[in-house]
Amino acid sequence: MSLVELKIEERKIGMLSFVEYIWLDGAKPTQNLRSKTRVLDFQNKRPVLSDLPVWSYDGSSTYQASGSFSDLILKPVHLTNDPIRGEGHYLVLCEVFSPDGSALETNNRAKLREEMQQSPSNEEAWMGFEQEYTLYDSEGKLPFRWPSKGEPPKQGPYYCSVGVDRAWGRNLVEAHAGACVMANLAFYGINAEVMPAQWEFQIGYRGISNESVDPLSISDHLWLARWMLMRIGEEMGISINWTCKPMEGDWNGAGLHTNFSTQAMRNTDSGWEAIGSLLNALSQNHDAHIAEYGAGLDKRLTGLHETCGISEFKAGEHDRGASIRIPAHVTKERCGYIEDRRPGANADPYRISTRILKTLHEIK
Image 1 (cartoon, rainbow, N blue to C red):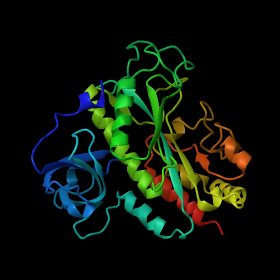
Image 2 (tube, one colour):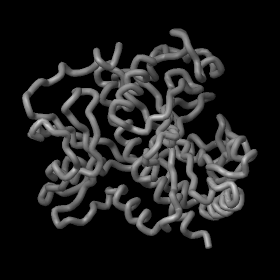
Image 3 (cartoon, one colour):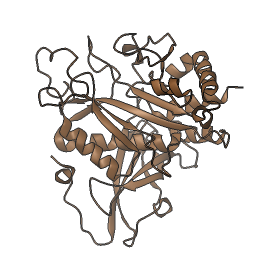
């Protein structure tokens, strides 16, 4: 099924546009995405953020307020095309504020903004995310196409696979990839993962001129990509499981591998020294990072299935069993980026980015 076939019948409603307001709730230990739709008149012009009004919602129904004082404010912060409804309609990611104008405690984007304000002007931090996830049936009980009794053949043939007998759910994956590109996200690629019905997409640096890959922009892109995956999944009767260890036993968990660099790390003269300094700082802040890297992480970081143990910190060149992997070409060129393999699939990219920047800014 193509993305065009997935679309709700395109609304030709004159000058009016549907705008989907998207935000994060207060669920614990993992926040969920919420959204609602508003019809706005942009006079047939493409809107900018300042054209979008703030909106309110009932925070007592999203674990963010009491019933006696429930109004919370949605402030639009990232606007893009809506590839599901079609041309002339939009998605807008929002931050959540109290009526007095203060950022809500669950507004982790605001915390990242504050940390980025502390960044030196020459830092030029870049972030990239490799989002693993597992497709489940519509009731969320079993991975997509898994047998109701027993398990599929063991891992081995599924990673980067092709074929109806091993690449399960590609229709949704391809529709989602197309939607992300149409929404102008920094969508890098897709692949089938090690466990059957498990996939990955990447958001980050693509070498495209003038494309922003700063931590705030890329974190926004990841949340919008997550929302679209779940929304398109509705059309196909497939749910998305973001947990760190979706299936017990001899099956890979699901991560959110995080690629990070600064201008100094990418520079051929200073790169290797800057990378070494960051690795040293990361090793000294391991527990603080684990606390920000997703719920249920202990079930994934066992030292098996391409992970390092949760209580251990290890950096390794080319090593997918390390906490931090240094890619082969980075070792060869002595500059580039590192891959933090610790975050779980359900981790908040705002919290990951904030924690990495805090650790970076502690380096003297």
